[in-house]
Image (cartoon, rainbow, N blue to C red; front, side, top):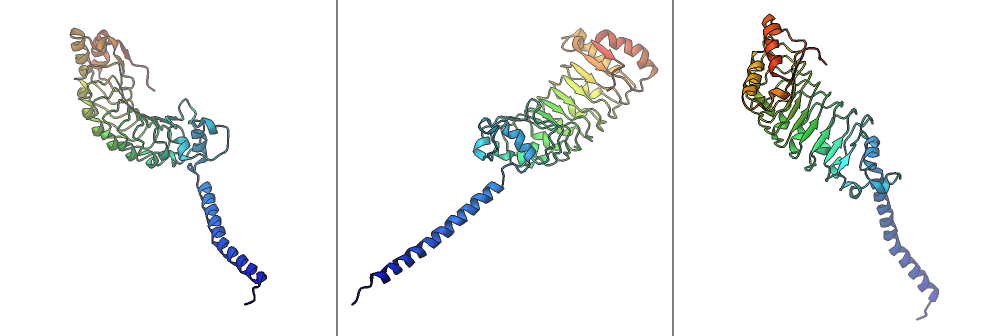
Length: 300
């Protein structure tokens, strides 16, 4: 048989070409996937990405995409005012910041907290001045000690009832009515609920470490639920519907005659309440004798 080297060469070229085709196609597909990954950024909200990037020192002044590996060990985001007023709308991507301890993003446009609900190490959150209605995801963050959700649209505090380590809650200027979810949070030291819709303080009656309470600008008529608490430093009651001060007098007198745990340090703010004539006269004089400060002017 006649051997045709030219023919053999053609066959080999065809075979090699055929074998290369799948490899080339595979290579193209891989490149497409890489481009897709690049297009799908870890932080879709570029304003949030800019705040996070500040904590990634290797990429702080670069434009390289942030990866999960870059952010997994970040402990704080936005602390020191760097997260304030950045027009952030989405928290997507923060779920990758698994070591996060502190998050401060006040005065933004955030509504949804789902992306942070698995950050089990987080201890402090400041999200004041956003557009938050549902704080459900916070209920899973059981390491939380400090929450600031002032100036949002929060009506229901129920998700907080699981946060047994919570010590400080700032929730001024929302639409909160019911404080029952706070009843079992016995490590609470500070509660700020100015300008809400609270009318009943009974759920706070057993918060034995409570030092600072601001319930100014609510609809309170009765403060007797606070009578058993003995760690007071500040109590803001201005702009309510209180007419009688006898409970406060009895509290302070009992303490002054006993352990003196709070009366010598107690600062009371009572402006803009419809005090009775007796309260304006005799009761106020008695209260001033046993409390450190009785202020009838401060009304912010």
